[in-house]
Length: 151
Image (cartoon, rainbow, N blue to C red; front, side, top):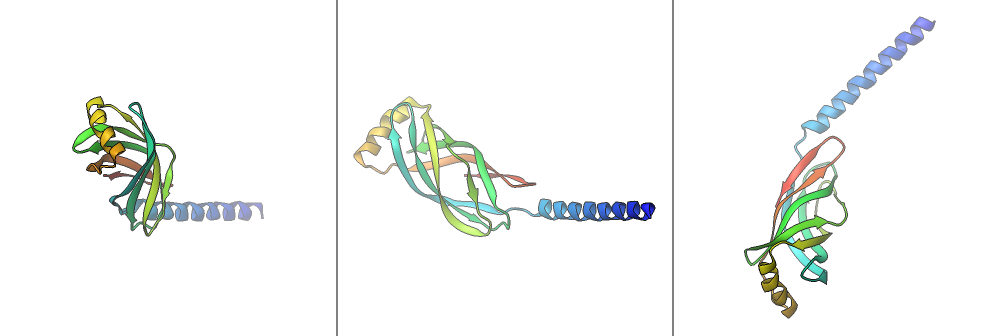
């Protein structure tokens, strides 16, 4: 009887292993389709020559079944074709699967190009609308997958 219990346990373990492997392969082989549609809004809560804090509205279309977490970025902020500096995400955010949604993402910007900052900040304070672009990529990750999303 002990041998049959040991045999059944081995069979059950093999079945669990095979199902786990199939599930992993099914998830790993799917190609997540996440597209940045555009920037919808930028709001600034703190503005100085040393840093800018605010939120940016990013419209994202996700055709993936999975939800992804964005927690790291390699992004640059450009105003009127001048690189202003690097953007750092203040907190991770989650992209829900099978949705087209605008996410309000808190960020901090440390200006690297003081000449651009000196010309752009007065325009923003006057209420002018400079041409804004975000360039670079963020890393989206889920349980088994990682994907770079380019802006």
